[in-house]
Length: 451
Image 1: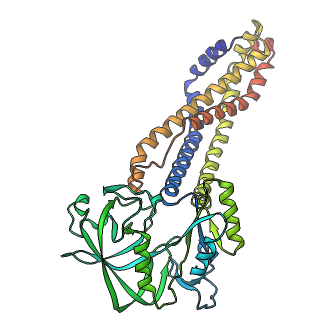
Image 2: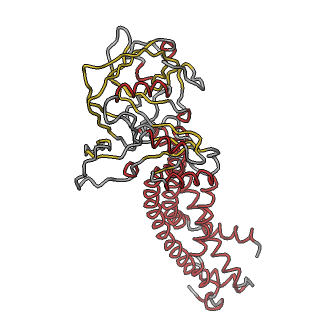
């Protein structure tokens, strides 16, 4: 019997029992729906993690620290021995600990490591305030601009070499500083104030971010900066804080940091540094330099390591949902077996007639396997289409709630959906083997006698 004949006969059999066929297909569709949404969520999360990495980290750089606890969870249940040469930090839970800081000697040693192109200490300044003439004062944080942050500019341009005494302003400061729009801020002067410290405490938010300070109020200075660009506030998932970061060049940020910390134990000490690797796009070369830095006693994390950290939780959640989806699929397999067995029992006389008219056992076997395959196809298509429709409806809502901007959390792949449907067809064909075998072994004479 030709394949087209098998398909036609199978379709006639399935349409003659529409309710039973649809119920079985819907059972398969439930598992397909869960698996399709899980794969879409995984794709969206992976794309979003990749965008975070791309917009915040140079793939040719390593994040280097003296203290591995900055990349791991610290046991806060045990007291820590005080060390004057270490820096104090406060975790997000308010637990005070100490970490070993990078010094100028460390920066020099890292710079002299074979394969290292440059070393940039990470500095995040908690400013006393930001203001302009006739406006109130606001707290803010200032950092060195990293081209790999790739901010969306609302006005202005960012030159390759940012001039001294210029600043990149976030849109969140526009209204409060009296600017009518982003373009109005370009070329205008804002004032940044910093204070000398008598003591210093670093506050780590997630990894290494803002620092809160205990100022010496008798010593402060104001610095004027011209606004050269205004950037759109990034997603809250990309930047866990308010996103109100000012960006300047390395010279200005280092100058202000030196003013703040001079005369304290934090002078020329850094939590971490970005180490740019020569020809760092070559993974082998990057790994070699990373290994060399680790041998010197430092902790070095690459972009790939950061990406693994970001996707680890995603992978766990994805695995849980996949398990539930597979359970639903397995349950539907038994439904297919049950449906096909009932079909065999109800069509015993029909089977006997087909065999009496010359249909071979293998053709009877193929007929029932084809029916099972069509049920799997129907369930897979229903579940996949439903998932895609739900995804299209939910994507704008999810993006708005999570402040994803133009990114989508549910990203469907045609190849993945196709493979999923094909896999379900194969699974249902396997499930139809036992009923098909039973049908092919029926004695035509005995089957014709069945009432």
